[in-house]
Image 1 (tube, rainbow over the protein chains, first blue to last red):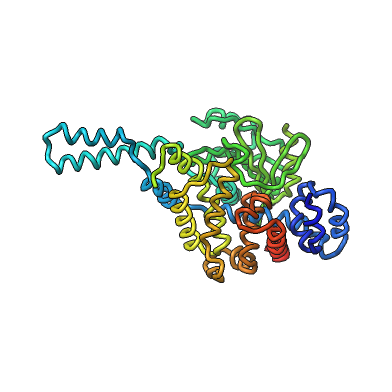
Image 2 (cartoon, rainbow over the protein chains, first blue to last red):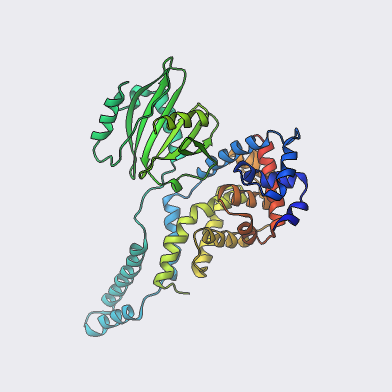
Length: 282
Length: 143
């Protein structure tokens, strides 16, 4: 279907416009042999992996740009000027004026009040329940650094006993979801946990560390849907499907827990190593 | 122009939640926060006065981007301010405008080439060319 398009492309155009599909295992059959041949060349050889990392960074950086609440409200208000009143509402206002013996000033105030109610009511009715924006990658990357740097100061409970931690989460007031700890490999220990209470969501956080303290892994669990996180390349480890992201200093993977919660793991381990740990529990 | 309740609902519940995405598109194109904010505002003002037909989520975003792209002055050489993020200074500012728009639409906003071509008023070959040039800079920039 797009054969002519692909044939007319230079090597650079073909490689760089299809590198995402190659990474996703969806390279069109009609160009797969040409693409494979390009991958043998030194100038393209490692570019697929570099693209995956660059794509992850792009996602992370761009997610950090968003409108603040005031700007969002301003954009919503553009519809107010264009809203109309129904004939019945207008008639109601007219009736108020005709039937009463009140002064012109009072009628004017009534008009303003009803108009405000109509517009305010419409905005209120059609406005979805307001939740703050929770940019999980942005906030939790930061939280992971803070937790690892100051575990005692930041954690509610410091213990290496997993059952104590599960009990802590089970009894946490209004947490609303269950937290299952990871089964960490030999040489790693759970250090403690806390609940980060944002205005609009609670996040369970568990810190694991290597026994010599040289590396850390933070597990975050919170109520969310898969689409709440930015798109990323998906990997599989056993029956676990996960999305991986990367930043300057850490790797992150996210996956659904099969209920209405997600887990985000943040650490310096590779995405595949973290996925193996996550899959071990399942 | 007045909005019926269903149009008001479409504006508030479907289009307004896409304002962050339009802002991100605008930011990547214009390289500067205030200019991106102004383009986002003016696009939504135009949209409020002339609502597109409801789409299926992806196509709602396409309509917003198409409107913003038409409003954008493509003769201007946009530059990233020194106070801006590194990605604007070191990567995006080296791309031409079409490459920035294609890259952000496909690699960040998740549109496909066909939707991007429609939004940017280009054909698919032009989108692929712009996208490949943008990705090459993104990859080789080793950002």
